[in-house]
Image 1: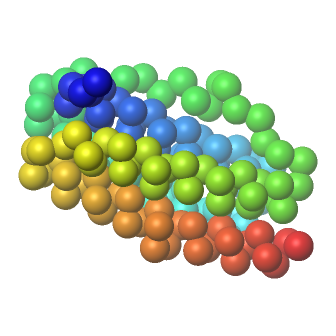
Image 2 (image 1 turned 90 degrees about the vertical axis):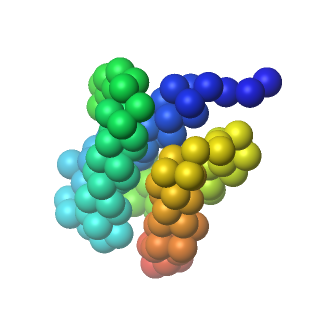
Amino acid sequence: MTMSLKERLTLALLDEYKSRATYAKIIEKFGPVRPFVNIHEAEGRHVDALVRLFEVYSIEVPVDHWPCHLTVPESLKEASQQAVDAEQDNMTMYDRILAETPEPDVRRVLLNLQSASRDRHLPAFERCLHRES
């Protein structure tokens, strides 16, 4: 089944909202630890990039309800593992969305977001997980 542009963008934005809110809660609990503090800022930029696409295509931007629905792991090690898993899931989600995305501007943004997860976020969280082990 093919997803509409609105469905594809919404799926991506809700995932970025979730990451941003999760990392914010982790920072709230454990302090401004790296890489969470850096990647939280990056997730904000990802949200902004997706919101711009919603505006370009005149699609209503979904509300971010994630901050009210998250619990934080008990340890930084658990938080790091959760982040590794989330970034891996994020890359898989982008594979699925990109397979159905013909719009060049949307593809460019999605590829950039996927690349950030794969090339920067995942390795940073993996290093953090190894430090905490």
